Image (cartoon, rainbow over all chains, first blue to last red; front, side, top):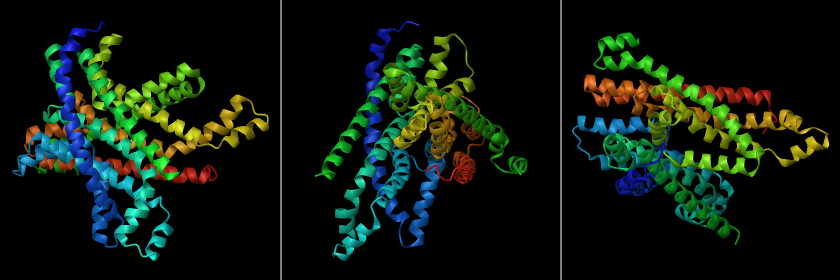
Length: 220
Length: 226
């Protein structure tokens, strides 16, 4: 099966356009999810049972329902409730929703990895609850936080491919349009896969740089 | 109960196809998991015991699988692979193929992680006792490697159960497809997809409780492995 480079050349501009949408959705949705996930991580270990129950059920929901079903639920379900949301808004919402569930578990595990005596010692030295987190617990949890967070970011970046079912013009949707036009499945899907792969490698490398920084900082 | 639900509720079309769809989800994930386990062991052997070429080939394969969306892999398995190997594949076959090759990459990394977590002193001890290479693998490394991999492997199986919902994109009639079709017939997407979410939730809850049971059993059989 020979590869038709003319088709690849023809496909690249549209695919790059799609990659831009993929990157935009990730760049907004994932940080938003990390913010919400941080909130849930603290809620999951709260004193009061209500936030605890809420945060833990949320995590169970996200971990046990496929992303595709969440996307379908939002995309087809919201209009039934009279809410008209664009496929872009739904993509941001679904990405944030899913990222939050996974990130809250990652953060909880990372925070628990810091010995409880550290927080107690800081409290007894007169640190406020906020200062304990800011200066003692959170900085020490970074070593446990960065590697799984990098994996999560890459996972969510790849999962945005699912938004092609909502006609969001991201990378996978663009490649579907191209293959429907040209039937050049190998060339178009191959190029799309390469673009995803390169992006994942870049994200992974950024994570490694952060890890190296963290190690350097810790050993000073 | 399901027949009553399909006869007496507005979600009839969904409950009609529910069992069939859930069975397809379960069978596709299970077959892919078994094939992926075999492929994963093969990849691990290539990685640790076949010289630099084998090692780099496996590293590139794992990076490619982990760096691209499963959806793209599915589309490649369905639209590209039949042309390359000259065999036509049904959507279900293409789906299981893609899931197997996808999960194999993750499984080989799980196994490698378990293998490298075994303290080096054990290999030294095996050699000091005069064990040959195959005895070292058979009696020291492999049993502990598989034991340590059980929790992440069962987790990988539940990931696969969830990921198999993507097979609906290439028209395999599993759970997500049943749901899609039911919304077209009943025009109640909110209810149908909520019900689907509940069904997935129950299936995954079953899978994770079974895996916890297996872990507890194994902890009794090999209490000193950790």
